[in-house]
Length: 121
Image (cartoon, rainbow, N blue to C red):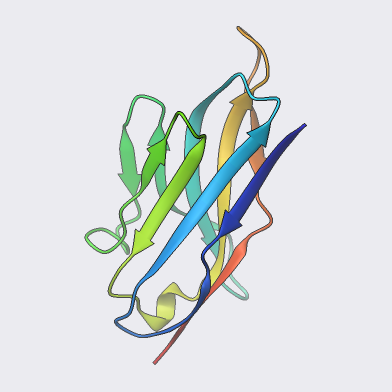
């Protein structure tokens, strides 16, 4: 079994900062992709930022320059410091990890339960 758990959400005023963390644990052999997604009320889930095991980064245009994704491969942990937060950043933020449990095995995507980020104006 693999568990993915996010933490660090909360309520912050516009212009403030939060730092999200995501820890993957369990029967993990390797993780090749990790990412942050978010879903606002009434909207579809969207990608926020992703990082491959090789370090390739990808950001949504709406968060470039404000959010920074990073990962600690040794700890199977993903981070997302978020600065200059805006009310439109309000959403449930989800962590995803593509995990294989054995060498040469297939990777499956595991999701966390989500953490709420609320930015007040």
